[in-house]
Length: 314
Picture 1 (cartoon, rainbow, N blue to C red):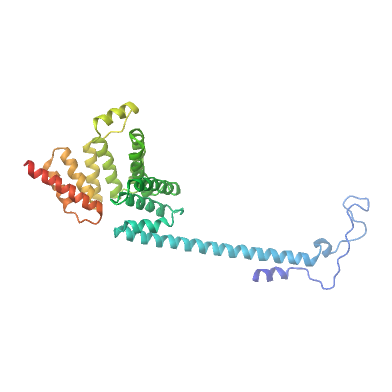
Picture 2: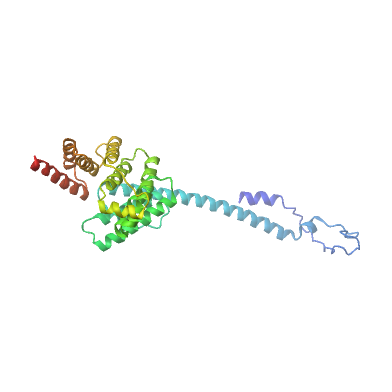
C-alpha cells in the first residue's frame, strides 16, 4: 500500500468543490473555443472521486502484478529444487540397481519438460524392457515408450549429450521391430547422435563405447545383410573391427573398468582379429568383473564360456 499512499498525495483534493457543467465544444461558433467560460481543474480531470478510484485501482493492479512476479519466481525456484531432488533419487536408484523402482519413480513425471528427467526416464524404460521377466509384448511397448521420452528430451535441449546418446540407443532398439531396411536407414542417424554426444562430452565413456558397438555391428554384418544394404542404399553403412577396437580402448582410457560389456567386447574384437593372447586378457577381466546388474551376470557367463573354448582348443 506504500505505492498507493504516494499516489494519493498527488490527487488535487479540494473539499466541497462541485464540478461545473462542461460546455459542448463548438457552441460559441468558433472551432475549439468554449465561449467566455473557463474550465476548472476538476473539469479537466472529470469526477475527482472516479479519478482517485482509478489511480488506486491502478496502484493495486501494479502491486498485484509485482506480487504475481514474486510468487512466480518462487514457484520456479521450488519447481527447480523439486526436479533436482527427483534426479538425486533417480541416480541413487540407478546406482543401486533398482530398475523397477526407478521406472516407477520417473514414470510419475512423464509429462515433464525437463530434458534431464526425460532421458533418465527413457533409460529406465529401456532397462525394464531388458529384464528377463518382462514379456515380449510389454518389452515392445517399453522400447517405443523409451524412444518417445528420448525424443522429447532432445527436443527440450539439443545441447544435452545424454539426450543424444539415449535417443540413438532407443532408435537402435526400435529397429529390431521395424525390419532390416528401416534398421539400416536408422544407422546413419544413430551414428550422428553418438558422434554428437561425444562432441558435447568427450569424457563420457559410454558414448564412446556405443560408437565402438556401432562399428563392431557393421564390421560383423552377415553377407546377406550387406547384399540387402547395397540394394537399398548407394552407400550403406560400413566399418571395421580395427575401428571398433579404437573406440573400445578410448572408452577404457576415459574411464577404466566402467562397464563389463566394454571389457567383453574388447576381448571379442581381439578374437575377430585373431589375437588370442589379448582376447584372453580382456575376457578374463570381463569374467571377473563384479556383477551389479543382470547384464553383468550375463556378460560374466559369456566371457567364461569364451575362455573355456580357448582352453578346449589349446
